[in-house]
Image (cartoon, rainbow, N blue to C red; front, side, top):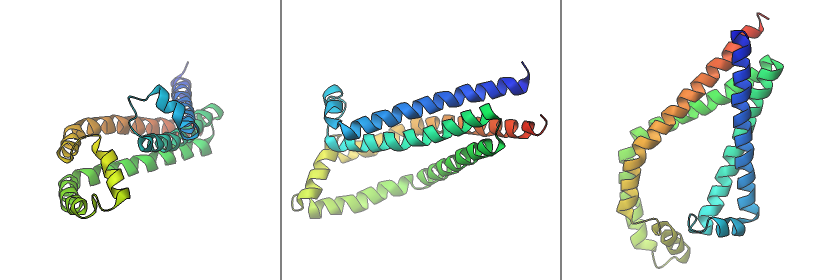
Length: 191
């Protein structure tokens, strides 16, 4: 088995795993949206409010759909040796990579600003609307069942390193996926 064939098979298997993971996430997201009550019965201790389940459902649907598209483009593009699909795969992964880098830069630059913004905007808003606006009070009460305001800020500071490490790992996988797709794309001319 030559290098091209090995990389092609690995690209197919890797993207097939991504495709299946995306399908699973999409299915779970749809299940949560359609029958959130049974989801709450199974994972009741893990999901404290219906609002959180709704958000998890939408998040799973979006991420699952994106993974389905990426997995399909990579797997089918490598299998059929389609330059168009390989270039589309590269482009989608590149767009996601650029968006992640931009989000990471913004998060790093504005970490201090976020704390100031939370303190400067949320505290006066709480003093003004908490107790007088029923909807605001309800949303804030749901938020506070995750802890107090200082705990939220502490969690953000504590988990920033973990989130950065996970993001770096994902970025490395995306760079590898783009490199492999470009390798296959360029080698198709030689065949």
